[in-house]
Length: 94
Image (cartoon, rainbow, N blue to C red; front, side, top):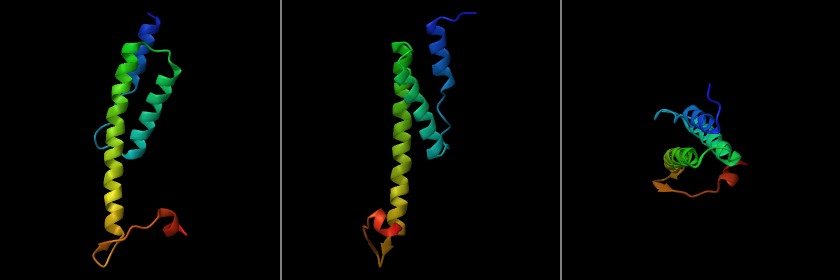
């Protein structure tokens, strides 16, 4: 059994697979958080760090896309008399 740091790092990258396209925001964020935690430890190779970073960028873009869609839905729901009324979230939560 090979227990070198390189083999452990490869296992780490393999264990953090990208969620499927239909995954929800929470699943994407949880995966992104695992990637960040792994990168912050700093105990994997540069190559594996770069692979995880690339996965993180993909996840960040997917999260941003979902947030953009949610924002559009909120604007539609906030529409009054044919106009979008911008309101602070905090003021509407009272």
